[in-house]
Length: 259
Image (cartoon, rainbow, N blue to C red; front, side, top):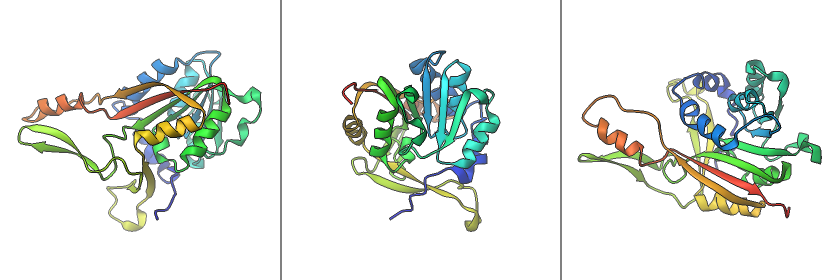
């Protein structure tokens, strides 16, 4: 049984620096799509669950939304508070996704709950979705972004070549799995290595869990990479396949009023 330590707090500084890259997937793919879907503005309330260092929370607030950010990592929340341009207008809390005690009372319910590249790293799927349903207003929306579970399966998927064609090799999909992920692959000193745990679930697991928690799925989008290969004998084929195999999936679900 793998340890269930899923916090990214031990690599907080590395993760913060990574998101400064102007060519990151977060910047070039996820951010424009999530802004299009949510349309954050004045009068809209959003909770960013597993918000990390507040990368998306800050943009939501800059667009006028009232924002709450929470993460299990106190290190990342500290960075979020330090980095936030509009820190007085964003409430940040250290909290697990399956227990949000600061959201009690009808006045604290929100229009949107978002989990961006986070639910795949959370063990308690049903508890987290139940909390999302609890804190959303009736007809409030939950927006989830995941590494695509059909094509990006840790240790069970990879890019392969067959003569002049590239393809995506999938070794397993239907089984729920958990993986120990090396967060410091370039570190050669084993005593300094840091790990987390990631969970693979097939799409039907997410859809069944959403239904059980009182949600109806209202949108599903698949997002491809924006990157281009450098000129070379394989670049045309690599760029072709990037447009065919999506990297991310976005699921939007509406909280049913019968809860």
